[in-house]
Length: 126
Image (cartoon, rainbow, N blue to C red):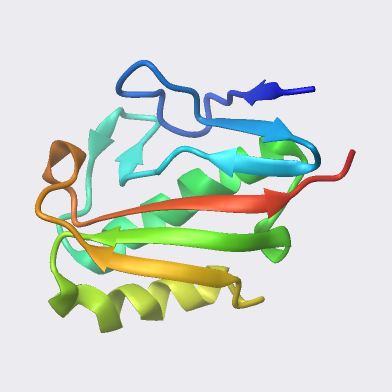
């Protein structure tokens, strides 16, 4: 059975999609950007601050789904500039201590011109 994941502790969707879905014991999250859900704004201007907010948003979705960073099996990371790779990794490593599988690519433009976006696949307690 598929179950949509929705929490007010993460930004609402910017389009016709869900924050995440749980199916067969896995959470598939939508990509999260650096929107602070309390203010509905992007507050950080640097990669470190934006990555922190992205990880907080992902944490809210993980918790709502019954999962955690420790249960993430795969991430996909999008950077606006690969020059931010090292600084992004410094923050990312504080949250993803289990070192899940990962893809990280640079893209031309991200929604709202943010510097990074991350999506996860994680195991969920059923």
